[in-house]
Length: 170
Length: 185
Image (tube, rainbow over all chains, first blue to last red; front, side):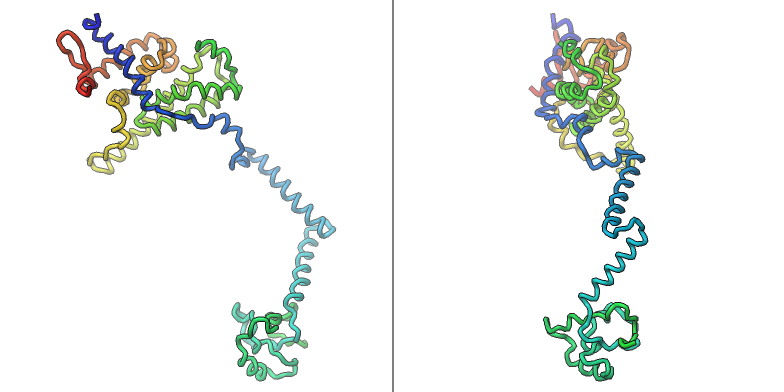
């Protein structure tokens, strides 16, 4: 019968061969996580999903938290005061670390460069303010590289509040 | 059995969608593998299909066969993919200036039947897979392809004739034999 029915033959052949071909191609396909699971899983795009209003609300909450913390620390809700208190804190901290034991002789009129911020003993001087700059220079040149722990590290900067080139006793 | 399972699916339920995903993924991937050129593309399209289906899951009507509905989305995704692929190929041909492309290493492992099936128009290939692999009725195929039911029979016949021709089935006195497939064996 099948010999007289070529279409039927081919259909039967397809019924037999096509599932095998497809199954071979699919092999052991493990389905990845379902799209519903991925939709529910928090991802890096969480903020984007909030939308503009949600993002704005999030920003407002963050700012309020920062402001609240600053207000708590300074004791005032005025942001100008927060800034001042930060400056004050910075000023009060710096001398503790960098106040020289002896007020250094100011450097020459050359403008301060990053390299000159770490003063050598020549610039900082080791004697009293009455000492002449030339003497200090001469003395410093002999010990341009102070040994570690020699105490010079504490005199690396000008004290705060002293302008460039300003004499220490002014 | 399909109807019994389908009654259990509730539109919009994520749990039911996950179950549908687990139950249909391999079959859907099989259809896409038959329609598309390679497995990676089929997997990408399967993911896109389920993503689209999940987005539309709340709007799915339980009176429609759910797997046919999924296949309809999948075939649309596959057709779009093949269109983009053809455009890309055209660009590559122009870039290569007629130099033949290097053979695809994944192609060597596929059967000749699958290769020829992939050469058919996507909707014809899908119709053959839905009938001969998944055992769909004409009504379900019509739903999956988005064509009237009466069109399905003629489309299936055209697909078979074309595939038969491409596979080189020959008229041997007294019977028909698959030419190249028979010679392989």
